[in-house]
Image (cartoon, rainbow, N blue to C red; front, side, top):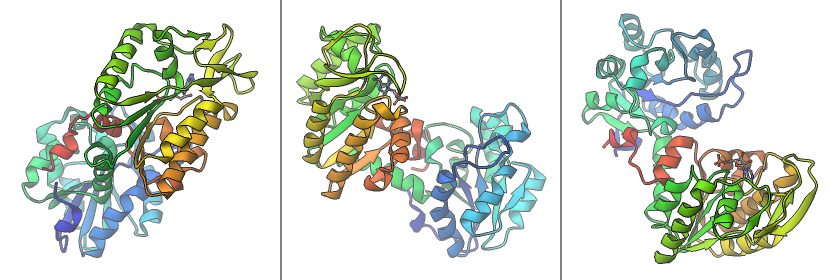
Length: 394
Ligand code: AMP
């Protein structure tokens, strides 16, 4: 995969697939600017070299030209963040779009309208991709969050640029962070897999069994494993249909020499609410009327000790119902332990959905080596899949 610094952008018009799929409030104001900020280094690099930038992105899942999902709601914020007056084109393809793009001067930035106003985008339509390709002279993919989609702008388009294509710096750092765990992880490697359901994490766990020395299982998944092992789980969340599979995973882990760590104790509540009464139980002896909602103190201590001895740590999924502050202690303590291991030189990657939210909510983000910006793309990478957006750049 060619990198940004291997290309010369002087007098070139970079067609950059960014991920500006940001949340908007009722007044169509951007409520989280992270994704726009994450695209800044690539854009700044190209402008500094004397190039111009045409930005392509999707926003939400519009049915036709839904005005609420126009990218015009983004360009003021994008201008502030990039420090350049971003121009806006209310078309994605066609003569007007091509004329606006071709008039760009070095140092200028043009944001095109929402790609998904055209159904051809998600269909991966080749003719649409070819029309998009006319907007720039070099294709740059910096949308890691969409790299698991074989859409027109994320993958199909790349064929129209032969050698003139590369990854943006965000996409490259995401790939690099995943490789640091999945390909070059220094031992001991630990993965902490939490979250609600075993069913959504099976492929990840299976793929990780070939990469890690330790697998910590946390969150709601614990109780499917515990039930499978014959424990009493009270009212805890459980997927009985997955008990056999849970046992198979434990067998596989054993045969591959991976140590699986399940919590010995849990903090349970007598109701699924923040203000539920709390009690600590042995994970295998949770009485009826109680449900496991966080890791217990002994488990947290054991996990902390283990993590401090690890050199590579992957964290996906919270260790409890972190949205309730009274049941967030385990998740926070594990985040702190990963932070401490990182401070000692370990590489830590946090990725995929709710663990990223937890890390941000509890101020743990600066303590991690890398926090992925791509939910689904990150998960598919951990499952060992080749992402179409990345394959297209090779
Ligand atoms: P996931 O998207 O699979 O990472 O799942 C994240 C969700 O798992 C969060 O909303 C947590 O509240 C939830 N979760 C974690 N632990 C538990 C638990 N013990 N019982 C129920 N839900 C849980």
